[in-house]
Length: 155
Image 1 (cartoon, rainbow, N blue to C red):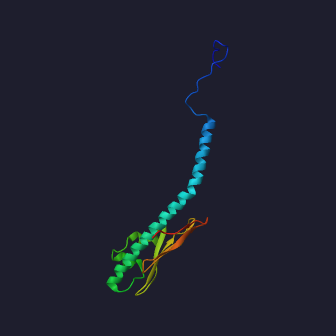
Image 2: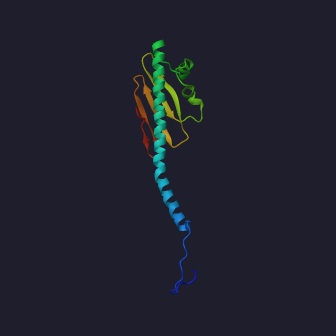
Image 3: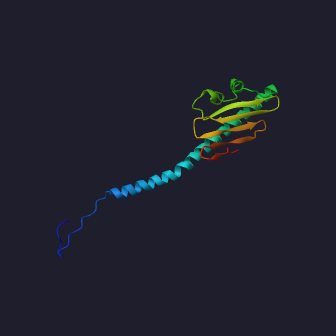
């Protein structure tokens, strides 16, 4: 303690502007709890955004198929045909050979009047599933996590 004052009591020291170890520990616990609660929501939002990108790419694929149909009166069964005519981005057409691709795009079936194309969620993660588009631009499918979370692409 400091020097005694006129009444014989010790003066209190002024507190410095630093935090105590207890205060820092409490702050860290609060931050950790907030992060723990936010991470699952963040992961779900990221996967929803990825599914929406896949849905948009399938709509692009649908548009390319429609243009191909107008020129040939049939739908094509390969992404290479659409890419060769510069109707489809190469990253979509070559997604099967890209190990870092989040979705792998493919044309499941094609005939003179119908087609179905899909975006398969690339394995190696928590998420699995497929999103599909048909000749009428109907987007269907879901992506499911191993934790039970379900993502449906927005139209």
